[in-house]
Length: 96
Image 1 (cartoon, rainbow, N blue to C red):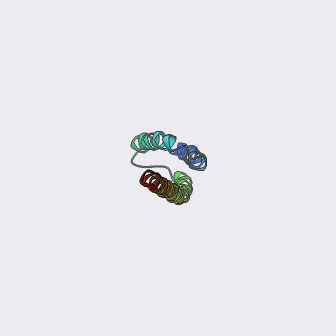
Image 2 (image 1 turned 120 degrees about the horizontal axis):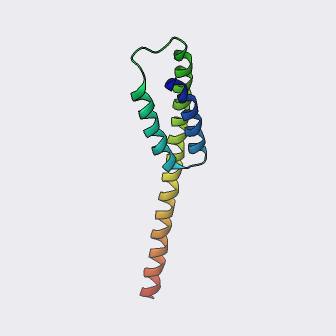
Image 3 (image 1 turned 60 degrees about the vertical axis):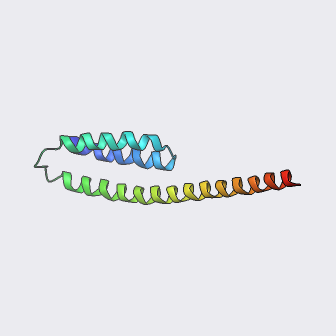
């Protein structure tokens, strides 16, 4: 059943986020969309626990992703600050 693929997709998503392989997330998202689109209107009862588990794992991964993005933003801001400092030294050197 296609709904059983969600566990695999979530595991791949977790690994991509942990490894900071951001490009893979787009591929996984597209694959998830294809699986969702292929689901029948009426799922079997045994699908519910698996889907709830996959949703919980996906939400936890989203939390990790947001934290990683915040860390990356902080790194970029520190780099920009360093560039400004270096630029100030460069201008001061020319003025002297």
